[in-house]
Image (cartoon, rainbow, N blue to C red):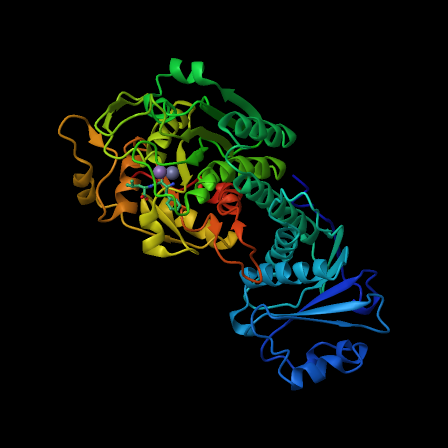
Length: 508
Ligand code: BES
Ligand code: MN
Ligand code: ZN
């Protein structure tokens, strides 16, 4: 497969836009803007920009883009990107505008860009600088291609962030955005990979490479180690496949860490989900190669937070297996015993994610985690409830859910809290085991979450259901089709904020 992304070199400057030595300048345009708000730009386009405004080709509406040539500036062209109403503009908007501008620049075969940041009330210069770097990286990505006839691709090699006033931390903010954008792209690449390429063993090796390059501790447990740990749920799911399972453990142990806190991050790593014996219909089954997106997010977030020196100890646990209907596969009616000793009656073998997560959450607790967050493409029901742009948040206590929710808002990963009332647990009652693995159609995303909760002990725990958000079905100006890398930036934002939440008393 050919290269799917590159990460540009970034710099920050306060130089005049005219003087920036680059191919294309990217300029956000708000709906209420007057061209006088962009000094010198219309003149440099020879009046083309004002003519385009008059004929309503350029309006400032979100994510429209307009490219034209410049004279008298060092850059040869400008892309004007609609940013919507100024009052609504925030870091999220800036990130998307940067992606749109980057994609447009690449289409024009530019390799060097400069982004003109325009101050807004909705985001500090620091937050905006980070968002610009993230957005540029996200735009410097193409889904993998296995076509033998190669299409020419242009990558942005250098990006200048032009700010009005130099501030102390702006270079660090851009660097944080660069690492977050690059790590999101790494996760997208893993999720886009076909299931025959990214088997559990290959996934574990990629995790090892990414983690080692970022300075994390890595351990890959093979099927024998997993058996020795008696992880009956993970092994039960893996039984139907010829491919052996893996359990990847990542450790971030910084010298200066918030005392008494170990953030446990757990990600579902089903490299392909056929449903098993409760096999899925053929339509759209191909999408189930992304069923390891939660795992990819955990791996790439751990790499990012290590690079950024997040001041908190973290342990990442990613169970990896296929869910296949082989001759030895787990069957409906079977009873599995988890590593913790709890018994589970399998009603539907397609509810496999919660099984592998059960053993993984238990293991994260054995490794000393004090706070848990799991990410999983867990349920179709969550897609029905919240659609394709918002992840479901489930957990306890509410103060911990709030921390993850606000981290996801900072990250530009939309999420929304869902209830986990005990009443729902009745739906998981089994006649013969501690509980079943499915709770029927009603509240399917919630019963899935409550199953996982059984393995969180009494730790603060949040489950993020990314079944709808991990994969974009339609392309948007700021988001091509395919894997989105959702969750990577949320987890890093959460870890970076540990000094604040590490002090909270989070007894469920
Ligand atoms: N990986 C799927 C969930 C999924 C569905 C992700 C659609 C993305 C898009 C998961 O393993 C699954 O099959 N869940 C079942 C659970 C049910 C059997 C209780 C589902 O949602 O149908
Ligand atoms: Mn499934
Ligand atoms: Zn699944």
